[in-house]
Structure formats: structure tokens, C-alpha cells
Length: 148
Image (cartoon, rainbow, N blue to C red; front, top):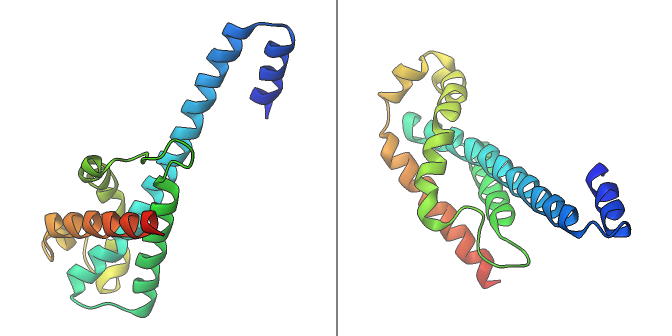
């Protein structure tokens, strides 16, 4: 809110260069907020995919969490005015790898009743398969959203 008041002041006092710089900062803050949300939803998605792959089964609750994470990722990632995405199709591998370690820590607490460390849990599934599946499902959900 302070930024809006400051922007108003810059415009009213005809300090247009300062106003433009502030707008740039506000755009960066908004983008960073979107990327943080995408990271959080990616962690949730990965937690449940890791558990599904490691334990080789799923629950309705896990399926619901995957569905909700995918829905929020697709909605948050879409740029409303300019079109396109905050995280582009070819950037998802890196984004998911960034979120993977945090997801693995939580999944280790939940999978197999928490009986494995993250390192031990990692031996129970194929990390690359989980990342591929997460990316594929994200891209499919985005595609579905953009058609509607």
C-alpha cells in the first residue's frame, strides 16, 4: 500500500521518472509473489507424487492434494493481461528440481509412517520419474485451462 501512495505522490509532483522506477519495482514484487506461490504449490504437488511413487499406491486425500496443487499452479502461473506464463514450459524442470528437496523432507515424515530418512526414502522411487510426471501434469493442466 505504501508503494501506491508513493506512486500517487510521484505523479502529483510530476516526478515521472521516479514513478516509472517504482512501477518497475512493483512489477518485480508482484512477479516474485507469483513465483513464491508457484514454488509452494509445486512442493505440495511433489510431496504427494513422491509418496505415491515410493509407496506404490495412493489415497483419495493425496489425489485431492495433487488435483488442488495442479489447479492452483495453472491458475497462478497464467499471466492475465499479457498472456503467457510466469514459469514457461521449458523452465519447469528447474523449478521442480528447486522444490524437490523441500518436498522430499516432508514426504519422508509422511511416507511409510515416517520410518525413512529423506535419503533412505529417495532409494524407494525414481526422482526423475516424479519430476517428469509433475511437469507433464502441470503442462496438461495449463493446456486444459487455456482451452477453457
